[in-house]
Amino acid sequence: MRGLSKNINPAALKINILVSHTEDGTFHVDTLELYSARQRSAYIKQAAEELETEERIIKRDLGKVLLLLEERQNQAQGKAEEAEDKRPEMSEAERQEALSLLKEPRLLERVLEDFEACGVVGERTNKLVGYLAATSRKLERPLAIVVQSSSAAGKSSLMDAVLSMIPEEERVCYSAMTGQSLFYMGETELGHKILAIAEEEGAERASYALKLLQSEGELTIASTGKDPTTGRMVTQEYHVEGPVMIFLTTTAIEVDEELLNRCLVLTVDENREQTFAIHERQRAARTLEGLVASQEKSRLHRLHQNAQRLLRTLHVVNPYAAELTFPDHQTRLRRDHMKYLCLIDTIALLHQHQRPVKSVQHRGQQLEYIEVTAEDIAVAGELCGEVLGRSLDELPPQTRRLLVAMFDLASGQSKAQCVELSDVRFSRRDVREHTGWSLTQLRVHLARLVELEYLLPHRGKRGQSFEYELMYSGEGKDGVPFLHGLVSLPEGTTSTWRGLGGELAGSKRVQNAPKTGPKRGGVTEALAQETSGDSSWGLGIAQKPHPGRQKVNGTSYVPMRSSLVASASSTPVAKS
Image (cartoon, rainbow, N blue to C red; front, side, top):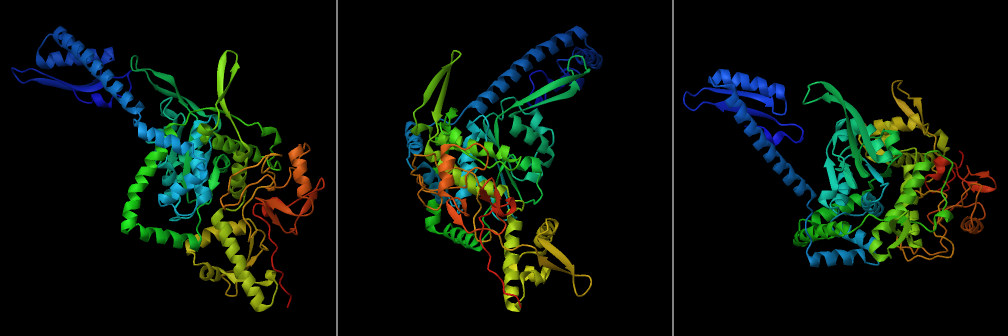
């Protein structure tokens, strides 16, 4: 018999079987489905003719073979299930070390320090958001991540660094997926796990399934197949249960909008200073100290994997939920609001070993939960202010950087020529020499800026070339991404969280502008008094008045295009 190991479905037993006569050397071989009576009868008849033997003898022996193969198949499947469900056992010392990490008062800072020790330079926000999103797989509605950047910027390294902190049995990694592959996974194969795909382009055909899996938490498909007993075509139902945390990377500028607005969009730092820091770390890895550090890296990975195994799936209750605010001027903010709340829940879940686990009885069922603290809201407010502020930008991060670089180029030419910014003309070659970008990169991003009317093309002097006029005055050039409408801390609470920049997030720190909706709580009104005047607030940074600022219901705000990045006044240019 051959091919027994290929039978992964317990309802099928298709093998290649050879029967021979030892005396005269005659034999008969064929492939058949042993659970099909019709195929067995045909095989018995043909084998009896070839071997010149009675059919009853072949039939009796084939029945014994069927029972033996069925037993071996069940044993193999049982061993496979045991191997899949078996988790690496932790020693008592490893368990105590992992528990000590989860009880660390500076847990989030410790996570960032361990990432740094593992060789991941900079990217503090991205590392922390990625780690928290991976932890959210324990929730009923996990977060999803898309890392969007240029080629060779380090997006795959960021994803690998985050995944290395997660137990192997709780992550499923693929390079590409076909359109229907997700529908045919086992019912519990993805439940509370991470689905990581190296490139979003490799999952383009599976985009529909990924969107459903993220929104609904499960997949169901009706497909036609052949009944192994009757041979007729029948409808079969396949079901895949979630929830699942989705992790993607991409270099594409145009990504499926329906998929993108279900995810948190991270962008890798592509500045020169970051490149210099990476080069220093790469050189240090070739030294003796780097060799020792590589061994410590493996220990830190095991430590965080064991800590993640100790996390339980618990309900999270937010006692401050009624006091929170969020912007509401766009429809897609309904999904972004859920991301914000989920991030708060994830931070609380990660600290479950530092919080009392409470319980409540409901209809005879005991529900265990932990509560959100003010510090969780402070951390989530800072992270969401940057990540969602960037996600809501109509320009991809690489295109935004090119726009700022062209503003610097045009500003320099306007000062040198003593003309207004609107009178400056520059060519694609000027931009290439100023930025050092490749022609392929410029072609893609310039087309995007022209389409969104940030650039106005003019016919050049030689007839076939183009020159560009910049339709952008530098709004947000010197600021940081932020999101209007978040409450930093509930009224009367304090926090010990030192932000990504090391600043203490105290109760008096105003994080964002008050919500402009009709219902205002005490926290919102208090913030409205503190932010009175014509200043915009984002992540605790007061901005100068923006020339495009408008008034709605007596509240000052900046239109969406400008408010995605903290506003900054541009330097006026003298007329010639």
